[in-house]
Length: 169
Image 1 (tube, rainbow, N blue to C red):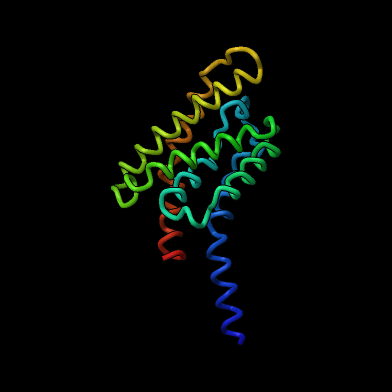
Image 2: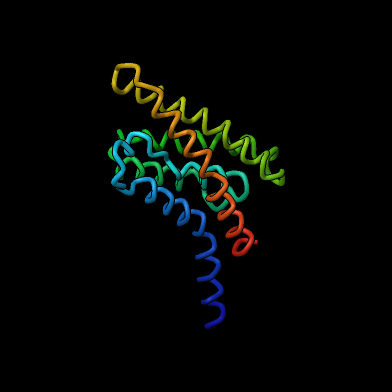
């Protein structure tokens, strides 16, 4: 009986791993760094694991988890409620739609796919923020967010791939 109990705990912990890792990246996005004007260019690092898990293990990070993670991101950074929920769900949906193409491809193709998806998401976020504020916002900070997001992608994605191979195979 004891072995069965620990087996169930292990399976539950493994199935929560994608949610927990995505949650960690969301908290990292919201960390207050003492860099001037960093708040304006701080990217939503949660997009990286959402893209990754949608392609490789979408069954472990379902839509309702993405919804909750988006609400949490909104609350942590003070965005209008539902803003990052829509952003995260859009990234998840786009990634799911291209899942068959990207799964099993070389890392460069996987990275390129994220770069394109992230650009679409950055433009969508800029458009939604412009609508919310009723004025066209400056796009420069969004370009910096995009560059940081695409630049840090290999580090986070390779870590996610290693953790997936170690714990979820």
